[in-house]
Picture 1: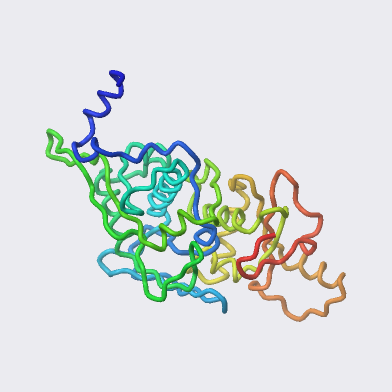
Picture 2: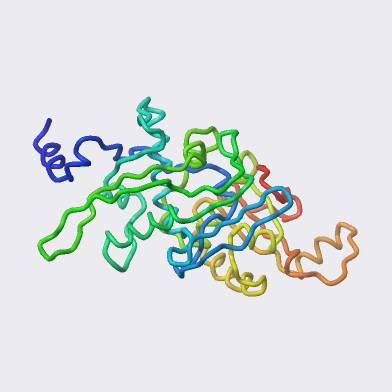
Length: 315
């Protein structure tokens, strides 16, 4: 063992020095279904529940105790790290004795997902873990070819390992958590997709647009979906008018890695539909197409030539 490795080992809490699953050396990955649908809050404001999602095929209910609040898209970063780490261990033939249980350092977690501003590291990580455990999800979505008829949490248990600093503050050094059965099946299944390394630098709505594009675009290079279904997929609790207005600056910033996105406005929509022989009445915002495409293949000449996505299909 080198002097550097010895120093690193001695610098860890005793509980972590015995067995450690980090660092994550490969890609950040996630189950495709967890990218298609909104399962996390987009705001840091405490919320007891998210709007129920139901498209006739998939139904998702997410709720949490009032004093805890539902897990947010910032908390999701911890889950993505854990899923990726468990997957990497499986591919290395090192599946934990207790399936879904992981031990890792917070320094490696932050190396991958970045640091969030405000508050102590201990309080932020503890809050994320509390919300991930406290959130209850009820859905007919399946992972690893299996589903659950009850409700589940993202993680079943956790422990934060810390050292007390001279000023009395707790310095978090590592953590142990156990992923729920639903999440563990996702991590070990055959439905995982790799994330772009710029994902964690994106804002909440940008993250959701990236995930939706990544999940639906496989061999094809473009698709479109109507604005109202997109609002629900993104997970916005704004009404459609506010959502459309807020989406404009996000799309103009063009920060979504690998993908372009634009709203087909009313005049263009009418012109295209009339050229195809359609007889139109009043066009509602809910019907307006939102076009997604791979930047390296260019935007389609006409949005209507791209396939429409309504459910969880890939193109």
